[in-house]
Length: 212
Image (cartoon, rainbow, N blue to C red; front, side, top):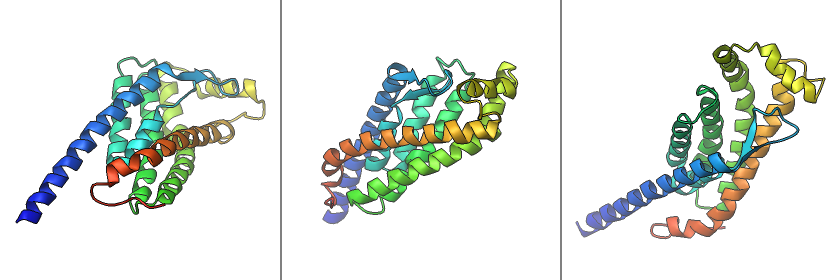
């Protein structure tokens, strides 16, 4: 009976910690998405680079993939209040962010080893990059074109101005969007892994010890 009570208290402590940390990471993700975003000269101006996925990855590594996805959801719901893309950009961001944090959290939580977190983040970055091609080709770009009455040829033309060889939508996605999404995922992963290595004893210490 004493062991049951002790386990229940430990679970409650973990559950509160999960809730508080997830909320904190969601707030940080919103701040980063609103303040630290910028266009790159090698990408069309409507595509912005930001660091808002890092808190979501960190939440996924420490609290589990569900927490990471919740950070992505909250960030993009907030984005709907200030959106300039009719919600299309937020939908795309959620798909790609979730495809980054889910593999990272799932693989990391199979073992407390730090190497599992690294492998999870690597898989997440690759999967997110691959999904970016499919989601943008079949969903995001057609939805954006329909919402704003802009033909896909006009969108492709923005890429063609940067690189004439990118003369079709699939080429644009393979040459520009896929590497961009991969690099963005790697940057978010590296930032989160640095913090995760410092913070993991706080989250694992009360029920298991992290290993190398």
